[in-house]
Image (tube, rainbow, N blue to C red; front, top):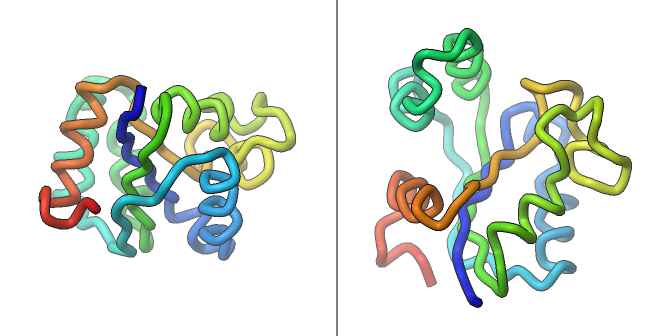
Length: 138
């Protein structure tokens, strides 16, 4: 099934100049980039995007981290794009992520884990619309 998912290259990976390598991995896995932009989140915008984690103890640190530098946001499209993206990213905790996954190669820990990806079709739809209008996605 062809689907779309949101991908974010987080500030730690952008600072390491890893955008190109990360996009190459998505394309090599058969995912197509349907929209993309480099942007910087304000703390308020980061708080809105991660509102689902508001009650979690790491919420404030996440907001601070995600607004600390530029991020690269893209819409990936392809067969089973959500599951494929999550497989390419690897486990959330970079210390547990195998080498060869994005988080295993570019992440540092559970917070500085290089990338974000949607976890379900409903989440993907909401996350994509958070960053892109329908006219922006090709």
